[in-house]
Image: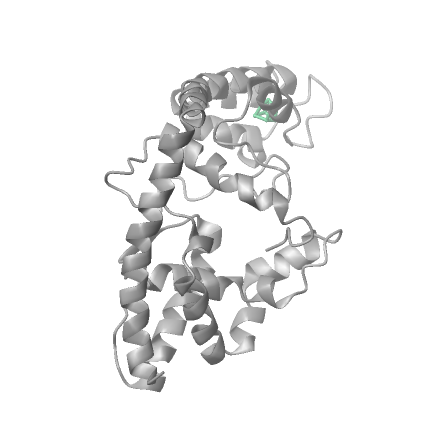
Length: 280
Ligand code: SF4
């Protein structure tokens, strides 16, 4: 939505994302993987739901307000950006989802989806959609390198299969406790992004990190270098697998082709129900 001036960049994301997901264990035999823009039913449902969604609901979305204020170099004051949560709602509703795996920051969007469903049912007098619930993991939010929400738009993310050199550079650039200006200054790990990554990726080392931070036994650079190694060990096997998948171009195309076919059938069925209710 924010890349409308550079649309060519979007196409490559589909294969790249598929490589990431396969390398982390998504099995296309069990999960339907498809390219949303190949299924035009999503857009039709998006338009139908757009007609009944009050603008006020969209303007109050915290992510819209936040990104407008953060992405000052991009003109994203557009309908596609404002209406993006409706497209997300279409993506969910289309497949009758019981649960949606989301990060904590996406909870308002899911709530909006539930409100849109209720409004649809109220206006047309028929309850046909399920109200989906959030599926949060034990770590519902992982902050970006600079302490803001992690986002491609903010360029403050670590990619699932980040290359080794970039990973190292990114970890070394992470924001830390500003009180630790000098090596001997004691730190406050609970407000440090680096520490939050230790909590997720090396929980058994958390207390040791807390100790060396509070007592200034190690400097931030050393602390980050150790984290970079931990993340490298975590990511390296996935990166290798992804490389393997990306070489299998026919297999990758087949996965998306089959996924598109399956998703197309399900979405057409769902949309037919909607068209019947609307009498169109
Ligand atoms: S020592 Fe580690 S946890 Fe403490 S402020 Fe520095 S980077 Fe953060």
